[in-house]
Image (cartoon, rainbow, N blue to C red; front, side):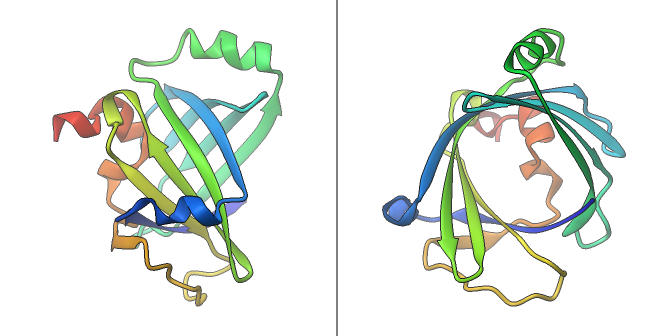
Length: 155
């Protein structure tokens, strides 16, 4: 239940040509405390409840627990979330033995595109795609919970 991932800004739309899936995601937060964020998400036609713990010093690892819930439960929980709903498309791009998840944001975060790659350990090697820009792993302003409070349009 430990999530290990690295995050990067995306410098071009070239990732779209290799995307195998594109799914709309709408999510809100029941709790944005950095030590225990509670997220409600609708991904396509599925609902999820996720709890994330505080990140380690490098920002690459943190506790994550997720459970699928019904779409009706997710829709109901979204109504009581804290202010600031995240709306985005997620693209899945295979790369070697990994999959990049590229989030293209809309609404108050329009213009922001972030790629994440999950790893099995913090030092695992991976293919760095040409469309990846600056690494933002551990920069809390790029966490979805923070983007819901301080959106990209306000930077």
